[in-house]
Image (cartoon, rainbow, N blue to C red):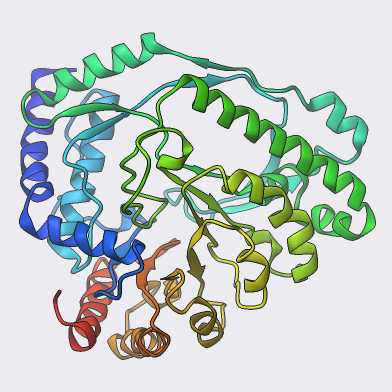
Length: 409
């Protein structure tokens, strides 16, 4: 790491800290916290999972550091500053740099094998064909080993030293624990088996499918037990995978200090009964170790709300582009957060403000009618056709709709 690396990062960090500590940011934070507290305020708007290689404007995202870790910091800072400059949306800014406490886990032997096809080598979104490495009980017995977890305070100390030196007086550095726990188990099983055998075995070999789930859930429980007994859990979660995690009333430590996140995107074509049997019945004991649960991603939940709502600490529900919005709004009411996921196809080629305006208004009218605390989270954006303006126009259009219905509170 060169002196020039430090100068680059510290200059960016000072600008970042000015924004992170500003009244505007505090206003955003209050709005995001109030929404998670089930208050009816102006909905937060966030944009995430952006194809950044298509977004550069006037070299603002061009990296200049030489050291690999310094370049990673520079990347995150430049992207954060870019969001605030160009998007009329909310941002998740911590007024410090998070260093994640290092926990090493041994390999359990369950590793995907795949064939991939890249349409664009620069894009991290590409096609996967997964091969079945868990075709039978013998394969599961042969591959599976219960993971062993180990704290690495030596790595924590080295990381803290590096980042403290890198930032100097420009930004505080904090050693932080887990801020939420995600368990998208069916994404993992799909990568180990491929979609076709995984879905067929729900019907053809339910006993074997149950055994796979029992194995993976036991591994997850083992990890949670280890962290709860040996490591620190962050009681101030900010980013809950693309959505705000700020909420009142969290405990100071332990899993009641943070969130659980669940999703079963690959179960879109599975019946509500199978969804309950193979997903909810397994994750419910995991989820209820936490203070709150956020459930759902791209899968529509309108036909399975009654099943999902059996999770006792459910607080936030994803409403995907494929969900029936009216049904979801009626179910959610004022009891949960209506986490609307607008359609990313609207920004893939050329953003039409009138189409965005109508989609946003439809959501807003439903949420007002049924008293739903609401947020908008545009994510899974694999392509904007190298037109940064697409996201700028989307954010501006959504903000104009919210101005009209909620004001600028």
